Length: 385
View 1 (cartoon, rainbow, N blue to C red):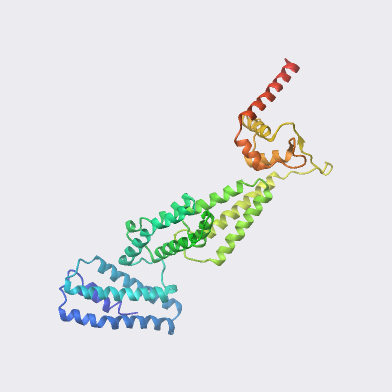
View 2 (cartoon, rainbow, N blue to C red):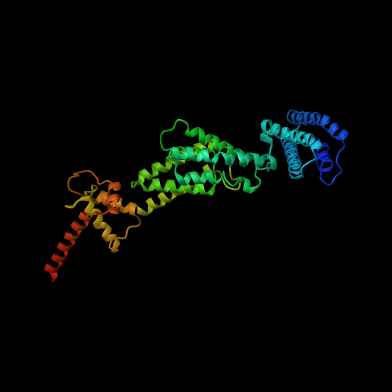
């Protein structure tokens, strides 16, 4: 479709105003300046007609994308031209305004028909990039004030710096980053506690789908899983994550910051589903055939040593490879369900407490274990010495 952006304006920008062309006369400059407001109005009416006329959506999109590309081409050409003589500056500025108003009108009223991955005109990209980078310092201060995780901060800030150095970017990239800055600052208003969890949820909702953030979220899920020793607790946690990510996938369908990567919600949902499948396989491998004639009750073995000593005793057994567990969490769960230490009666040993004592051994615990081992050696010498 031939429009002013295809014919009239391109003739003005790429031929009449090009550096290698003769300068326009004062009469020509005045004539063009009188025509530009009408050209702009014709373009706005044309886009309105395309939308509300008899065109199908595909044809409307094709026309809108074409107009956007042509305006971007001309704006980039003007941006690269050397300085105009003073008498031509009013015309130069009016052409910039005309093309810019057409583009902004498209973004405000016909965004659904445009290509979000299209490159912004350089003059607008540089202006937007400067504004984003200028706000980074205030953003870091706000996130630090509310104790946002440093790794999470660096993932966010890393995408907001170096924009000017990159030189160009898409409308989608700039819109995502501008929206992200605004939402993070809103999240900080009125907070008096650690905002890490809220910030992470916000980034998921806004589809901050960078590889670094995906790895951060996966590590967070794994860390939370390792805190639970009961298989049922792990299942409940993963089912909760699955429900939340499924809900987010349906409720929030925003654009992706990184177009070449999947949506962050979809990637996390896939990861959680895979973790559930791993738990299923682990449960099947650990299932044992129970003898129907065997007693159905299981009594924990009473021991005369404290939890600290019991934990260190098993740590030593693991170190000398007498006991070879498949994982620490399984070992902690086994000990907690298999032994009864003095003073706890029928209660189970806490796996979390057990792991803490397994990890951090005190000198008094080591002395107690040494005494037990010496007694055992004396017993061996007495029986077989």
